[in-house]
Image (cartoon, rainbow, N blue to C red):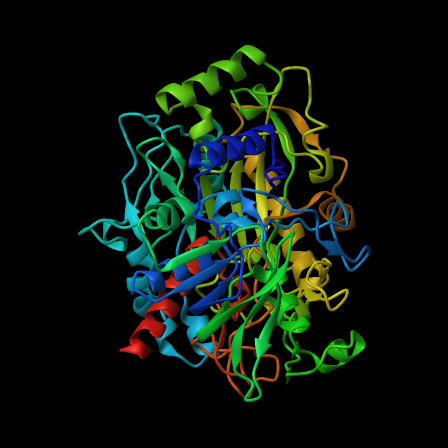
Length: 588
């Protein structure tokens, strides 16, 4: 089993592996006799949205097929990408996972709620404002406050209790790790020194300021609370309404003469068969595979479909376009305190921490690595160097939208292309503050290599292709250096900048460092964007229905009209809950 998880240190890799293993490889009730069958709904994609939506429909005694190409916690081959397309970063591969619940099984687990007003305005549907979506956020989450008896005394996490529902039991656990990263308490001082003040929390619809983040962690045993663990595993043993098809690839969506989606042609290693849908087909295959499946099924840009000999069901030029993503980067410094870089260099320490995690649910492996975050718009002192075009581009984002997120990363990062191989071996300790572009103006795209979903889609990430992204990234890099050079962090910083080194000072030099060392945080979204009928690039209406055809919806991050500035896991759950509620209400 491969787990090439995009985390930024040895700890990140091992922590996700441990969390995945302890999350359970339960028998998900996958079908052994694969024949043509009819359901009320066929859901393609066993990720965060697909699992949540399928379970909510099955709870209403609707027969649901859940189709997933992978097995449990399996990471697939890298996606095809276009070398040299703007900035691909440190390589030309974009990883994609295929598994039941892959997104919430392999992410950083950060859970936060963004402002939703821009989303609501763009789709002209005020049911998407923060106040109106809050019930759907709350429906999913069982919140547990931080355990102050186990967390360090100088790592008190603030939170807003009113952001969460208090009555009843809910499936998805949100809490705080019992291990607070020591470096984060120093980053806390550093961000304050440069003018970023603490805020109460990140779950009340506003992402500005600094605070310890909440995560999808089950506090009883400090394991990852994923959509499989939260939704699927509890339901399957007793449900007669949900049938899971693992190791089964969706080949194409089937349409009748009235352009109604009637089912999905699927294939496993042995045969090809059809899952018919009496009501709807719902695609939740993710930001790359959802547009691919639509295109090979005849819904997409007409020129692309014709090029690959695909019969056109609906000319939809926006399919595969408008891809947003967040990328992160940052310098590394040697520090005089214990960090995660001790794990690969001290076997006794590594063994003791694994033992502590396995037997008492404590220690460093309860940490998702990042635990302290800060958000801001770039300050005026740096904006004075921005071009007129950059200022104009950034003005598109509303006042409640930050431009940069800073993440605590108590590890040696260096170049993301070889983080594990390049770990220093001398026993010194290192730490990084990562800057993440959360108001990106660059847009990528996804297209198909053939008319077969067995062939990987082609992805052009197009990161840092605009002057605005470049100038914001440079400013953020300088801000991070200012944090490390602050009087507040001086007691722990050892020597000069370790990586890339203080010799890189000009804007051109800093930009080149960022281009060569940055990494996607795997937040790609918006490739089948929601919008209004008069927007030629919109693929979906505000109820996630595909324009131009009937009985077909898309419910995953590809449906986002914009990528919110925070970590998108919570918004994916919200969207799945909201669309499930819309569907159920329409049947009443």
